Length: 264
Image (tube, rainbow, N blue to C red; front, side, top):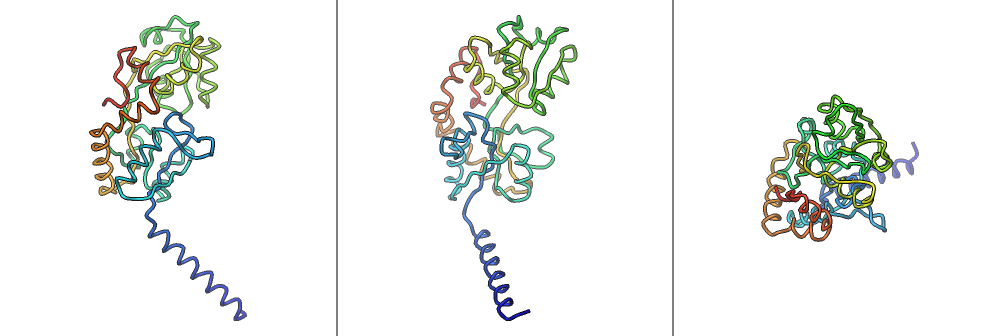
C-alpha cells in the first residue's frame, strides 16, 4: 500500500471517530412519529412535522433541557427505531397495549381515545347493539385495534379490512357498509369532512390509552417523562393544546356527553 493511501485511510478513520464522538455527545432529544395522523402528527407546507404531538414533544424536550429533533418514520418502524437507539422516544398517537409492552416501555397515559364508529347516513345503526345484529357490514383498517375488535366481538357481522383511511371512509360514504370502526379522534375528523353522508357515534366500544413509547429499562428517562406529563397537565398544557388544535373535536364530544380525550 502506498504511503498516500495509508494517510487517506488514517484521515478517514479519524474523521469517522470524531463523527461518532460528536454524535455520542449530542444533546439532541430525537422523537419519532408517523406524520400521517392530523391533527396530532402531520407534515406542514414546508414538509416539517407539526401538530399536537410536536407541540407536546417540544415542551418535553424543553423540560429535559435538550434540543429537539423530530423524525418522520412509518408507524410499523417506530418500535424498531426506538429499540435500536435511532430515536429517544415515540410520540405518535400510540396505544399502550399489552403486545407492545412486550418490547418497549410506556409513560403514564396522556390521551384516552376509545374505539368509535363512523356510520353511513344510509344505515339505521345507532349503537353497538345494532352493529352486532346479523347481516351488518363493517369496514376496518387492516392491522388496527379496530380490526382486532371487530374480528373478536362482531362474530355475526361481515368485516371488510382495507389498507387506508381514505378507502374505509369511501365505503361508509357510499353506503357499502354500515360503519367504520376506528378511534374517536379520526372518526370526528372524517365526519367533519363528510357531514352530509356520515354520522359520528362517539360512545366508546372500548377505551384505549395513548402514551409515550420508551426503551425498556430506561427508568431514569421514564421518570422524567412522567414528571413532565404531570406538570404539563397541572399547568393546563393539555387544555392549551386542545384550544389550539382540537376545538371542533372538543365541541363534538361535549355534544354527545363524552369526556374529552385529555380528560383522563
